[in-house]
Image (tube, rainbow, N blue to C red):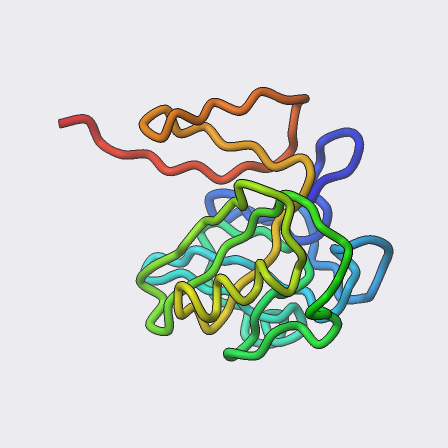
Amino acid sequence: MYHPDRSPVGLYVEDRHEMSRLVRSAGPGNFGLLPNGVFCITDARFVVQETLAFDTARPDCRFASQSGPLLVMAGVLHPRFLTGSESRYVRNGVGVSQEGQTAWFVQSDRAVSFHDFARFFRDGLGAPDALYFDGNISRLYAPELGRDDIGFPMGPMVGLLVPLK
């Protein structure tokens, strides 16, 4: 989530430096649909945590991004997600494994509802916690998958660097 000038909405931590502050209140759009949360990468694990719980715990994040809504929290889908919702978009998000050693970054390949997207994390991947990142601006660069999505400039991004062999 980001503002028109491409600056982050809510908490953004880069290399342990807090670049943007945590937003604790509800607000407009998906970001403000509480409960929302934070994706955090520590030295030892990945964490998806509800915003107020994160604020209390304040894990030592190397990198973090606040977004919303939470898709899954402790195995429970967000209470506002409806089974037959007509709101369908390409969506992307992140879920973490119970022990925090695996993070799944997922982008749907077609328009889906929040409910279906959240169920994929919980029921398909077994992620007890998952966070929505964004929708119709979703882009993916993964040449090995034949994906090189072109679009307008974006704000914060998540990347995976793999050492060359």
